[in-house]
Length: 232
Image (cartoon, rainbow, N blue to C red):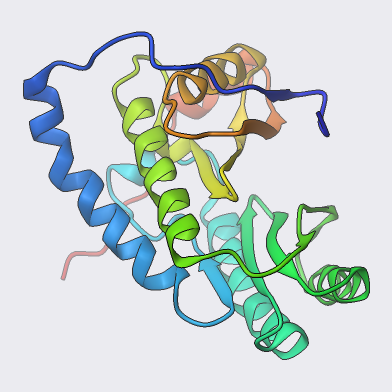
């Protein structure tokens, strides 16, 4: 296993109630369709977090400045990568609290290094970059659709779990590998990984790329009110 903190996925141990599933299905389908529209256009999939404010902002442990910078890193980075890979690769750029994850496929090691170099020069990026790009043929439409479905299922499982919050982490799936990013405690890290592993659905492994905080810092973050939003 490539990472010491990667976990093998386990089969689902509990059956969700039918009423909860009926309630959740529309939400999952909207997320899946929106993600599919983004990820299957062009050679670079753009993953932007922190776009929904209000209630979700209350559980996002990044500052508003970090959220804005993450969006900027993804947008600028994807533009640079497109010039490098053209139609010879597919690269997803994920940024959470300025920590960047790269996934996808490219034609050779040279291109993989060029992509990482382009992202590393962006303002605000926290080094080192986690480069999970593989040298391989482009993944199929079906494989990418399955990745989006896995992400939606993991997010739904997190929503169903007490004491952890879906907007406190970023869930990204590529080639059936689930990546978890966010600012969490060691205790929460174990819960997030276990919840993801119980999702099943063809997950090959789970990789934790968390930034760890202490329980005291978590309590302080939970005391802070959500940022006020301007009324239309």
